[in-house]
Image (tube, rainbow, N blue to C red; front, side, top):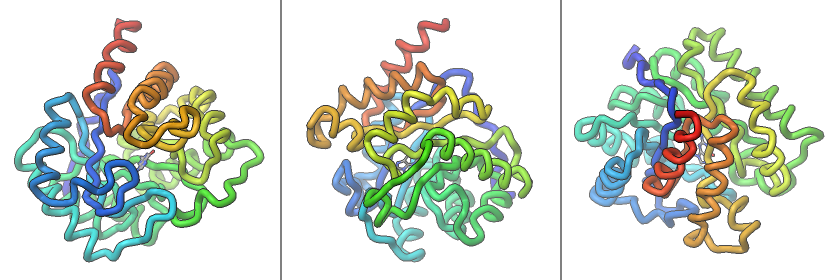
Length: 272
Ligand code: 9MG
């Protein structure tokens, strides 16, 4: 075991800053793909109050092309290593590849954020032997095609059952129940209506008793309602994040850390 996950104190909600080290990410346009830029952006998010930094080397935006293992390792591992040396925040690795999971945890990552919920070859075992916490996300289809024809008879029940099955698989593999997070995967093989049905019924996922990680920041479910471009979705993202917090979200995965930390403080004041 490379890591003993111990950090999941989610008694108060936490904020995860997104650090895409890809040239084609949907929201920041891949502007943080050089090492110095990535460090600068991470430091800013940490100063703004991010508890987690999620490092991703393969874009998961709709239509994105897959990247090779070598390229993903080359993009992410030096960044994870440097962040681990410089900062105390928990580093999360956004990957579905077993080898990237293992190398990232060796380099200091404490959380594996897998949009494929550890279904790729070797991923479940890699996550187990790494000792890191895991986030299991729901996605219908694959990033390249997932938005073509998403279909559910009952999106909330189907997402909930999937997450339950994947969490059970983790526990059977030996992963400690206390280090499993679940995520409905907003925008991943879902229409606008599916996304808002899920947001409306988030309590149903909370009933599964695993902490919920939620990512809606700047996504089209915000832009399509407001008819606004990616760079103009801050207030919509904060409104959606606030709803998620009120419905039990424990980690918010966002681009705009400072503003989201403020929203967390306001919602937390209700229960203080
Ligand atoms: C990598 N990534 C992009 N969107 C995401 C979301 O909503 N949740 C998680 N866990 N990861 C995401």
